[in-house]
Length: 102
Image 1 (cartoon, rainbow, N blue to C red):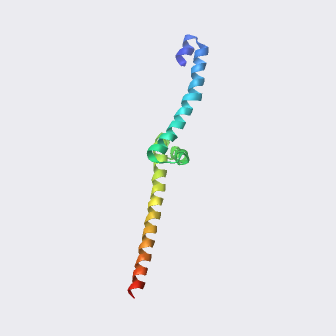
Image 2 (cartoon, rainbow, N blue to C red):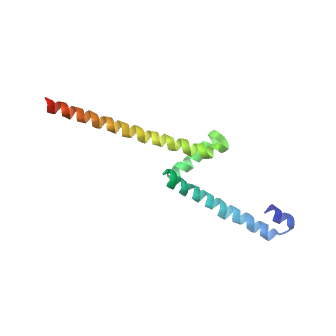
C-alpha cells in the first residue's frame, strides 16, 4: 500500500489498506480459532483469554504461551478430577469387598 501511495495511486493504496484490515486480519483471527479447536481441542474462549493474559505477562511470546499454559492448566484439572474419581471408586470397591468378606 505504501508503494501505491508513493506512485500516486491513491485509490489502489486505500483499497489495499481497507482490504488488509477488513478481510485479512479477520480471516487470520477466525482461522486461528478454528485450527486450535480442531488440532488441539481447545475452545476459542480459552484461546482468547490465554492471549489476553499472556501478552502482558510474556510480551509477544504471550500469543503462544498464554493459550498453551491455560490449556495445560485445564488439562491438569481434568487429570486431577479423573484421578480423584478413580480413587473414590477403588475405595468403594474395597469397602464392598470387605463387607462381602465378613
